[in-house]
Image 1 (cartoon, rainbow, N blue to C red):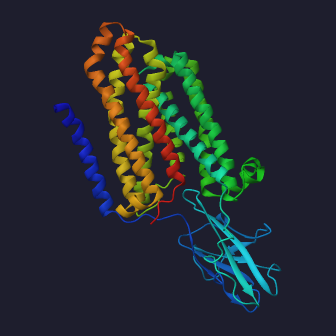
Image 2: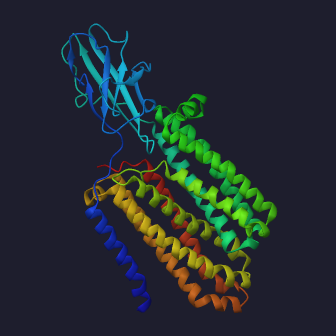
Image 3: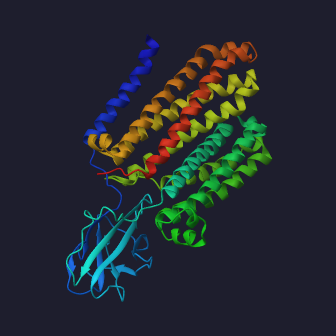
Length: 446
């Protein structure tokens, strides 16, 4: 009964804190949306306009806004003479008919998370007013390709997983198990995490370019998609992450060559820490953490959240893949208690940072219950509760059965329950990462 109360107490504290922050937080900003256009959609005009003015609900970069004809011709966009950073002007030279309908499409990329918003505008030139967007049910506005969107989610999932495995695995070896630098399974896991991290970043860069241009999968392979996306904030963040993965190769190479001696080296640890923090920050720059009333706190909370998740997940994977199969009693006695403490601190950091991010991004009960972002967040929280239960079972084994396992020299039947618990925890974590990837593309709403 005492153990259950100890487990229940922090859960109740976290739930109470979550309710408090959601009750007192200001609503978060949604993705960039069009507020109005001049001329207004559906307006009857006596003559063709020389330009079209678009006003959005937040500042936009010119490179993030596209205005196109139905034939696919992109119109030049500039700042409006008397408008702010939320207003742009598109020139309409020689494209507007003297009479009939003028139809244009627009799209804008949110400079914080790379989400694409788009729509269609139609004007009547010298004729009766055309149907408005609400009446044109058979004329859908342009939208990103579902295959590109799904590809982005998959690339982000692979990116999150590889980040956690690499950073958490490096930290596990450096802090708890320097001898593991020579273990083939540990070396293979780190090398695979690095390769998938770099590859997923390169793929995500092309997919983000196709997503911004409202193109298909084939467009993600074109050089123009890569060139255009590098002019946007999300594209630059992805490019920075790719360069940091290249630097991570130096850190990994030194560890694989030097083994345990390198893992204990202060100079190598400083370099590994610098690259790891850079990777974490570059990954967080394409999320929703900067939206809301306190973007600095959101960015800091996201960094802590990603760091805690990486230390927990990467260490968990290293434990399951490399430590437990060896069943070395000395390693079990040394590594498992140390990881148990590290995982406990990481989970606490994840919980606190998660509360700050919920306050920053969701901001209200209504958004939590009635937006796709809030509902996904509830799903993530539910799966995370199952993960914590599995982690609690693992921790109970460490407290009650570890000494027996050491005395029995790592006998398989004694270690097996702990292995099952770790395997269940690892599988559920993969689900959490999948939901996290979906959260990046979901609209937080207002």
